[in-house]
Amino acid sequence: MPRLLRFIPEGGALVEVTTRTFQGRLLLTPRPLLNRIIIGALARASRRHGVRVVAVTCVSNHYHTLLWVDDAEQLATCMNVFNAKVAREVGRLTGWRDKIWSRRYQAIVISHEEAAQVERLTYVLAHSVKENLVARVEEWPGVHAGPALIAGKPMEGVWYDRSREYLARMKGDDAGPEQFAEPEVLSFVQLPCWEHLTPERYRAQIAVLIQKIAADAAAERARTGRQPLGPEAIRKQNPTSQPNHVKKSPARASTPSPSGLAERSTKRTPGLWRPSGMRQKSCGMEIATRLSPSAAFRLTCRSFEKSRRHSRQQDDPQGGPFQPSDPVCTASSIGDLAVLFHFLLTSSRASY
Image (cartoon, rainbow, N blue to C red; front, side):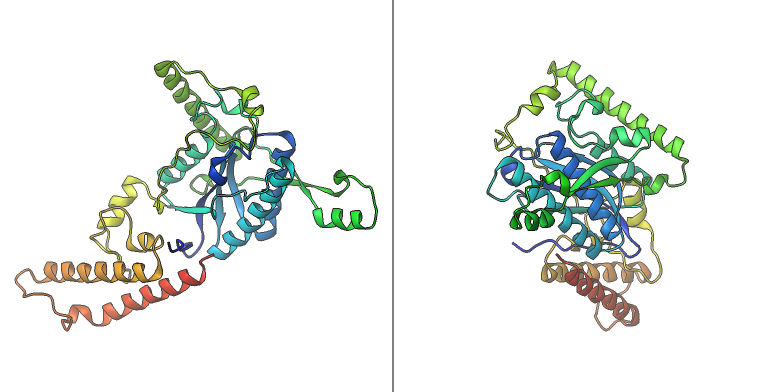
């Protein structure tokens, strides 16, 4: 099966990144040391590669984080550092000798509409509560950005320099690992659609979201009669155990808001090709990013021809059948195809 193309729009984008553990095992079960390591790894990776972190939540078998990145290469290098470091440290702490992650990280580009960004931020912050693991975000014993965002404070973690530790051990030095621990601070940036808010107003908005998450979870518990698992039971879980059922829902290629979809499907911008027959779900470029280069080329060419045929019928309803030699398929078509080929080329080069 071909790998999905990693594509970031020009100028940067907000991206939701997630990775699940191998077989959904509880290898990320919250523990104080592991929490500090995860925070430190994300802080070091984001600082080293200039990635801005909006939020992060880590439950027992997967994590979600919202990042602002400039391009696909920046995202790939950052996630390489983070996932590799966390995987090595989890293996060291749990004794698990198989692979840690089930697959490569999955990145979902989020559109610029406020509704889309707020919806994904709410989704990330709702983890641990929406699964009925704890009643409130503040009770989650693992890594969760909610309390830090409300307080307006960074999260403190640690990065263990295992290379220095290894060299010291080879020299016969009995120094403990804490001597090679380097403190890291994970700072958060505001959600792009709320950048204009003051820090106090932004914290208030986050608090409203978290209160709504708790209220929705309480209503669901009242309806079903189920009680949350609780922090103590979560800490006692065996990290190498495998849950009976792992919920997996298909990820979206991008997350535009419904209003944004309607606007994108009807608005015609000069010089920018926007196919019209794509199930009204997202633009052809976004769908193409989830396909192999050859499949993306075939899909976009079919949509290109259909779009041109529709355009000509609107201009000349009494005209004959569509012909490739028609003027409507000359200069503008060449420009559109040039944009398409450039997109496929740059996307394939940015695939990691």
